[in-house]
Image (tube, rainbow, N blue to C red; front, side, top):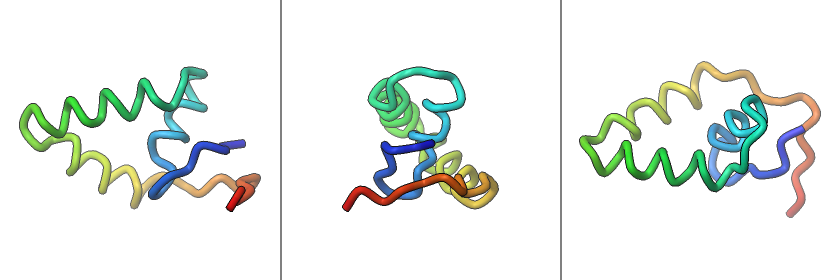
Length: 60
């Protein structure tokens, strides 16, 4: 279950899959984005193709 959803839950979902802290994935995503913009394109593609977690609970 992903509890670390910010925008589309992509980083939280990837972190959950690899069992790492979502902050690490978010920092890596920022580095990829600043290094040439590929991170932004990859995020958009991942947000479109990744299925939503059916067990997600919105904590807000």
